[in-house]
Length: 134
Image 1 (cartoon, rainbow, N blue to C red):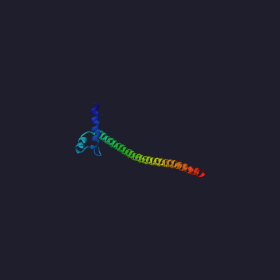
Image 2: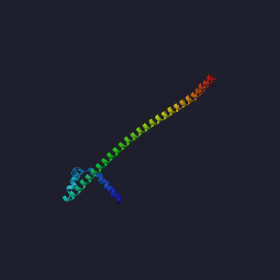
Image 3: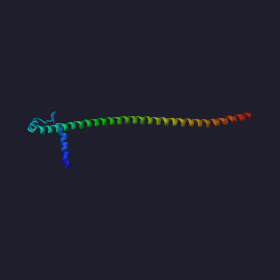
Image 4: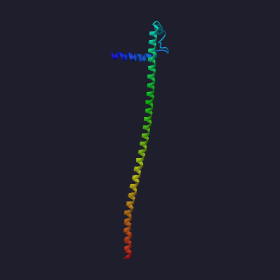
């Protein structure tokens, strides 16, 4: 019973597009409705127009939801691009940091070499001074 109600609702939903502005499906439908009493005809037309209005409203809501989803997706894409750019910045910062560390190590090595070479020189100079004294 529930399946037939769902099928009927779906049929009503889809058939809402079949009606013209006055609620008729065509000339034959108009003739059939004109054969009915005015009360029956007005009730049927009112129901059809109500279904058509509901259908339009549902389509508008779906369009708004779709537009909002697209906007959210675009926002996510742009923020993802921003994160990627930030990642690139981080990567370049890491490369710079590595380069600075290598430069600092090279300076330390040179300083050590100079101190070691300078201490030997100092010893020689001191030795020369001792020789001169002697």
